[in-house]
Image (cartoon, rainbow, N blue to C red; front, side, top):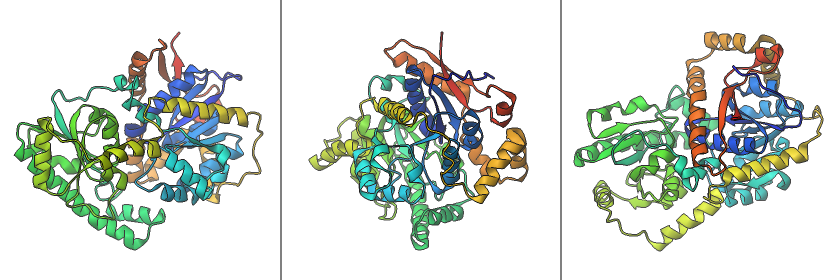
Length: 472
């Protein structure tokens, strides 16, 4: 373990990591950009933030979202005098910009946010129109993980761990094939709590179950029709990978969930999907996306992902398009699709120019400058009674005892979620090495565990958070 050196004249930023498979590389890139400016940067696992952020007391914590489930944490941070920023790593989340702006506003604590980084211009306009946050804290920055779709960071992508050319199939069925929850019923209740009607939630579950089964059957038929072509099926990070074990019977089929969607798309011949936002990533990387539509439904359809793709209306048409793609004979898309592809980048992602991490770092630096010298905001709303009790327990019991109680009395679902969102120092160090090699600045960074600089802080901290340091 490495004990943090607290340097009074250096700003300190904690970056909360939600889903490492999806978010870690982009946040490491952002962290490196901040660290290169002299900022102390700590990567904090989402489920450990209640311990580590409070113990480290950074100048600013950059959250992965603002939702009802973290409203108490936001209030606690503000009352401790910590600036709160948000870079919503779920981004468009399958919703229109207006729906997204309304959903965020309905959390009821956006007035406590000191910085909100939206991905694209459509979101920025929707947030302004709905009064989701004040103009002074809103910035359209893009999302750092998409910096790896452009130079110089595309060179930092790892090679896919399959030494053959392949067609990629991305699935998106976490509601009916969940990895972390106890099944579709629990996912249905989560949708209802998020504001959807019970009728709509029931319909989504029914239609998603049919789509999931149809996608699995389609994958089997592709494996049989193209025995000499390798296929990689990559389930959504929140899907249960074991449900696709039947595909292991086919030697030309690989089911893989490690790595990011971007690195798998980067090595693919083409992408087959249904309602998966990775279709937009494929367009960014100049990999052709095919959207299977013959078992899609209005309740499931994600318009942006569908519209950037070639629409496929039957299994026979899919086979024909895959054959054309493998033979490099795909005709150009129509002008309407080409125009939408260009427009979607600005609307949803600001720009794919490798500079989103710089824009977010600029916004963080500005927020800290504006917020510097603020005293403890004791007049901020208090957390709920439950939130106050949880906070008191963390301080009183410390991390080890709290974790022991969680293991003894917590649910198996919570344990799976916590395990699935952990990340290792070796993983962060590997990402840093790849970024360092692609960077023109010649600087080298590494990651180290941080446990605090005194016994009181060490007792409360998880030991799982990592700080980025420059090699000397």
